[in-house]
Amino acid sequence: MLSYINFQVIPYLTNDQLFSLVVLISAFVAFLMGRVRYDFVALGALLALVISGIVPISKTFDGFSHPAVITVASVLVLSHAIGKTGITYHLSKRLGYFSNSPSMLVFTLAGLVAFFSAFMNDVGALALVMPIAIQLCQRYDIPPAKVLMPMAFASLLGGTITVIGTPPNLIVANYRESIGLAQFNMFDFTPTGLIISVIGLLYLSLIGWRLIPNRRSESAQTKFTTDNYLLEAKVEHGNKVADKTVAILEEISENSVKVVVIIRGARRIIAPSSEEIIRSNDTLLLEGQPEELKQLELLTGMNLTRSIANKDIPHDKLEVLEVVINPGSRMDNRTLSELQFREKYGLNVIGVARHGENIRKRFSRIQLKVGDVLLVQGHADELPETLRYLGCFPLAERDISLKASYRLLPTILIFLGSIVLVATQTLPPQISFPLAVFLLVIFKLLPIRDVYRSQEGPLLMLLGCFITVGFALQQTGVTEILANKLVGVIGDLPDVMILGIIILITMIITDVINSSATAVIMCPIAYGISQQLGHNPDAYLMGVAIASSCTFNTPIGHHSNTLVMGPAGYQFGDYWRVGLILDILILITVTPALLWVWPLS
Image 1 (cartoon, rainbow, N blue to C red):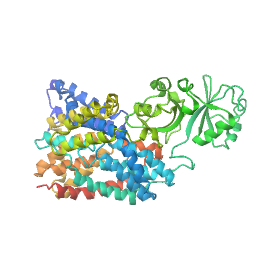
Image 2 (cartoon, rainbow, N blue to C red):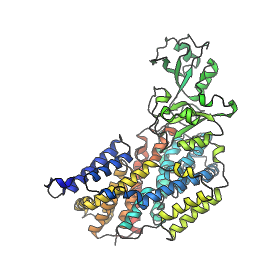
Image 3 (spheres, rainbow, N blue to C red):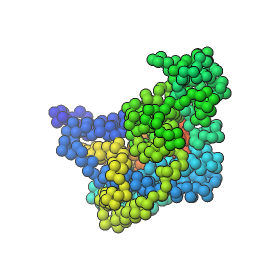
Image 4 (tube, rainbow, N blue to C red):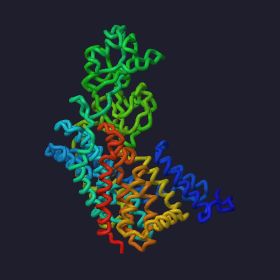
């Protein structure tokens, strides 16, 4: 399309370069605003470059065959398989018994998460240890808010230890191969990754947790901090609260439960007055903590709405669980009615909690988000598998789903075998890890359906699209122009400061856009700067990989940060209180470490 423009719009920039810059800046703004999900921002950027003619139509989806995409997809499956063995749960449970002080508990649990995330998906490692962390916090009377954020940050730190620890590492490793050098090996990231992980864990366990505000619930019975639940209760004919005022109903609970909405046929009475009369067949939306609502149910005889899907289940087979919606869940950005939650899955949502918002809708109309906490009722035998399929996990100890299984030893052996093949350079990651997945399925250690259920579609879409966008920025010379401009500004500074500035810029970008997108953008820029200065590019590329994982300052920077926000009751500003100092520590630590491990000459 740009070929039809016969004049140069801006001097010193070709039209292809100008349009590519506009697409890059637009994508950056869209990432920052967050109104469109990051995978569709990446798709839009790719399509814009294809329609303009910068990316040939035949190469539109070449990014999806990139080794990084294949490796990430395989690691997601392997993470899921390891999680199903129960090893992470039982290790964290046993070690957790020796950690009865906040500092020791943070160090132990965050250290385990960091170790697991070196070989697993970051969010998967965090999600597997979270339930036992919440239980231990309850046992030792420690606010979960003091522990969960350090664990989330540790999942990011641990990902810097190996090439498969996080997608940015794989992107950087494959970029190195694309410029004519050998791909980074499995443990090439380990020296610098271990250094910042140890520094980060010491900071989080000794100082970081103390900077987190105490967000615990006032109720001693609450297992974790959340806002009040909103529950539906049907006033049956003849119930003792029928024809009584709202004030009388609230007085029964000693004003600990509030009537926030009365639904009477097609009429909705929002924030009813204390003198409003409650009628038979009204549906009340009640706000309060679970134990307070349960007490009101016992005192009034009102019943929580039970679905047709589970009304015939024997009472002793019904189970109620508090669960959190995981990043990548099938429930994210969908309503219960769209999911056909009751009819299709046989589950009944009887409570919803979302930190920072007051929900005033019927449950079926609430658009669910990552981090929402739900009170779910269903068949005890089917609940664990259904929750895994939907992308939720319970915020409580669950022996039924966390027992060590017969799959443990063979699964671990196959996974270790794939790591050895990569570490010895016998096979590249994009072959070794799919081979491990194949063996798990063939030996019936992992159901085929779990291979597909464990995938994170948005992440793979982002990688596949933005890798092609990154190639286009290189082909048009945009990354070279940006590198030239940076060299003109910082080229006369000492080498350690130049490397530190590249790391700092990457840290700033990754806090507002996706970490994988940051790595795609910054790799060619960092490489261009190293070439102009005559430096070995390895230190620059390693710096980009590490800095891309330093998304500590916002809850939206990484899925791990989002995941703990609801269960711990964090506010947006809580993250930078801890994360800013951690960023500074990493910056002043990793810069000289990189120069030591990867000399510039």
